[in-house]
Image 1 (cartoon, one colour):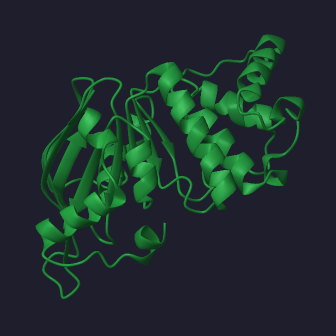
Image 2: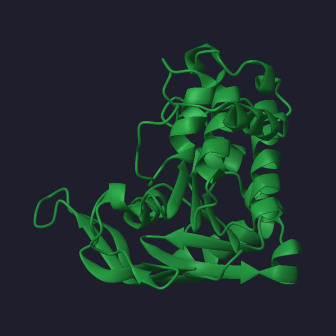
Length: 264
């Protein structure tokens, strides 16, 4: 479903601030893969997601989704293939619009717009059923402004919006990092439930090593723009946090110095 072939990305080339963010990285995700991505600061995790999403072009290599080469497609044209949830709960929704209006925008992404009713009664009933799944009582607040919701409620809504049209690829960019632990756990459970129900091919960045082990069928570790560890299936299920720390130390030759990952 996703093929990343030998991609490279360097920021500020030829200057004192030159930074190689992706170094000939290749990655293949089969349909239904749920891959968690971990690594220290500057490992290239977010750069990888941004390259796939089209936030910035890669210097070399190619990116294919479901066999379609999207390497040179601008970000807005990739939207029909990709759903994304950001780290900041405020980014994925329009605060001044109602819950049902946000869902309607997500449902119409990539479609031609006509002059029909904005939101039909049938759509409202459909949105209520989908919101019920979140277990947050939002199905009774369709006309509430999204700006009145808590961060956790907004992130859960963003997750629903990102998966509404069953994208070819779902990108979760540390989407629980800004939430308190209890809310983060709830959003992660919802993420796993939605991914499983729709069999969504998913790439999830997390700084929490326990979450990386618990969720998904595959785990990759990045370091200096490369994938240094790729584990799946039964081998992944048997992993412990100490195993990941030992693997990082073995490959990098140094101890992990990422407070967020260690404290998690």
